[in-house]
Amino acid sequence: MSLDNSWFSEACDPCGSAFSLKVVKKLHEETSAFQKIEIYETATFGNFMVIDGFTMVTDRDNFLYHEMMSHPALYTHPKPDNVLVIGGGDCGTLKEVLKHPEVKKAQQVEIDERVTRLAEIYFPDLCSSNNDPRAELHFVDGIKWVQDAAPGSYDVIIVDSTDPVGPAEGLFNEAFYRNCHKALGEHGILVQQSESPLYHAKLIHEMRAAMQKSGFSDVLTYDFPQPIYPSGWWSGTMARKTGQLNTFRENDVKAKPFKTKYYSLAKHRAALEEELPLLQE
Ligand code: SAM
Image 1 (cartoon, rainbow, N blue to C red):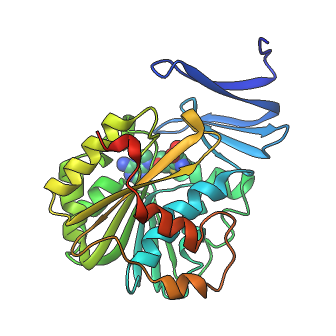
Image 2: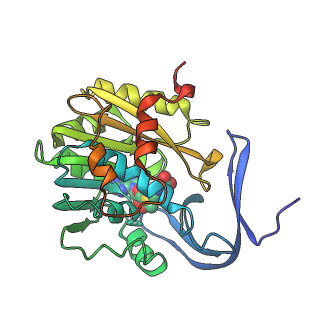
C-alpha cells in the first residue's frame, strides 16, 4: 500500500525501514535557532512532535520512554536529592522525576526554549509539573552546563536528548562523560537514551566504552519498547560512579507512591538479570 500525504513518515535509510503515523492536521511548524519543529494532530496517537524530521514524542506512547529514562536510575540511587535532566524539552522526563518524593531539586537544561514553549501548548499533560517548586528550567547548552557544574553537585544526570547529530552530538563522547562523572556525587548515576539495540548496537558499544573510560565503575544497557522510534525497540544506558548497578531500592519500588504504566519491579529486575543479548558479541 502506498501512503498519501495524510501520513507522516520518518525513513531511516541505513536501517532500510520507515515509520509512519496517520495525521489529521499540522498544528504548528517553525524553525527555531537550533532546529525545525513540527507538531501534528494524529488519527490515533494524539499530538505528535517532530524535530528536524525525526519523531520525538506523542501523547500515546511517551510514557514508555519517560518512565524508563527516569525510574530505573532514581530507584538505583540510594538518595536522589538533586537531579539534572539534559535536553528533555517536552518535560515528560522532568514530570516523572518529580514524582519521587525524595527529589529536592530537579533542573532541566534544554538548549532550545521553543521546544518547551510548544510543549506547554500542545503537550500540557507532560508540562503539568513545570511549576513544582522543586523544578528549575534553564535554556542553555547542556554540554557547557555540565562542564561548569560544581564537582559532586548531582545525584542523577539524565540525558534525554535528540540523536547524536547537531546540538546533541557532543552529548555522546568521552569528554562529556568525564564532566558528568565530575559533576556527580559519590553514588552518582548517569543515564542516557541510547538508541535502538537492533539498529544502533555499534553506537551503544561506543557509548559504553566511553563511559567506562571516563571512570564510571559499572555500565548497564536496558531496553524497552518505543513504537515511534526506529525499529520500535529502544534503550537506555546507565553508568554508576562507584559501585555496581545490580542492586536498587526494591522495597521503595514496591511501595512507590505513584502509578506507572510500564516501569515495574519485575521490569527493573529483568533489566539486571541479563545484559541485552545483541550486545554480547
Ligand atoms: N525522546 C526524544 C528522542 O529520543 O528522540 C528526545 C526528546 S527531547 C525533545 C530532546 C531534546 O534535546 C530536544 O528538545 C533538543 O533541543 C535537546 N538537545 C539537543 N542537544 C542539546 C544540548 N546540547 N543541550 C541541551 N539540550 C539539547
